[in-house]
Length: 250
Length: 221
Image 1 (cartoon, rainbow over the protein chains, first blue to last red):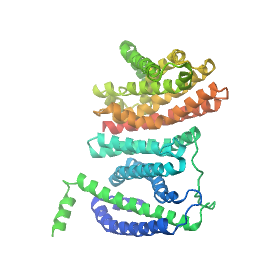
Image 2 (cartoon, each protein chain N blue to C red):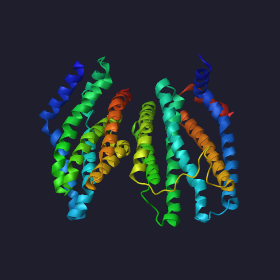
Image 3 (tube, rainbow over the protein chains, first blue to last red):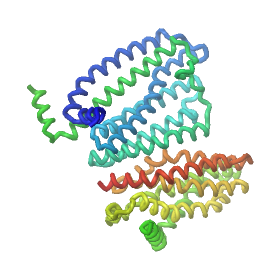
Image 4 (cartoon, chains in turn green, orange):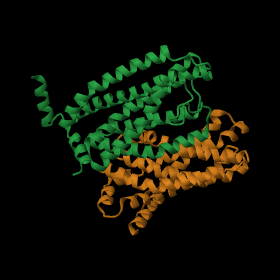
């Protein structure tokens, strides 16, 4: 067996995963907290005021990382789902279904902060602009995955169905994005480009990137916490859980 | 291949014998479309502007309603399990069911659309584009809808959940189709939209039967 598969199978064993994730979660939360506190301080007190949008632009430090995360988590959810469907690895299935509510929350945050930003900038809370609409559709796709998962009682069957839907969604996502873009656009152009040089000064950009990294640690921590709970719930009649409870009580 | 043809024949025969299955989506379509002039007022200019969107959304609703039952009868009487164990390619059998579904619900909608266009005062020159767009778009409804139907077969709250699953995925079809019709109304070329729709239909024709077969395997496990 090659080392990669060996690693996957070892981490995929419930008891080992439970132990490992238990060790990782505090660190993930701690790094998230440090990065967020620093990033928020920089964002609200240090970064300069925008000469066009004034102070209202500062909401991007929440809006943009949330929008990025909502897209990244959808793709990760599909990848976890594919791993689960192809190799029948239960932890991957659990990761896929545990990702959905986190991604949906990020999509919702991006939508809400986007419309709060829209009020002073566009003069209205909601515009059927291409990116807002794409984000809304992404939120609906998350709702579909969560709805299907909760409609099926048997946990592994529910997870596999949700994973398959996520895969179908990820194939369609670029097409939806492109068609919505074609449909209408009045959103400001992309300001952050990797490699191409951003149109933002560093004092504005660095807090944004720090916040983007902080949200990834949040995702890691939230995902592992959710996955642990789901695993405990599914395995509540298995031996390793009983052993674990006994150990914890001692 | 013989299994494919006999399943297609069987589904068509079933649809012809229980005429309600073919007629109900059509009646539904007519009722939904007729609600718009009643709700929005009969002004011909307004109706002409919204005609394509209304017809498309009504077609979307009508196909979704009929998709809910696509696998239900076969699930209830155990035929689906027979398909699974028959040794024939499940994707191919599913494709036969999808084609039968399109022939019995999609095609009638396409044939009825000129009547709806007259009701809603759609400009004459946009009518051929509307029919072409429906011809390219309704198969995608059946193809993507079948994946949703396969995932929700045997679930209690099937219908609403099915809509939640497939509507977001059908947005590109809606955008491209109404874009094509409004381009035709404004006398600018609509072929770009129609070609994209054709590309999308071909892509879904290639991928959807496999996704649908995989979904059925999960639902029956």
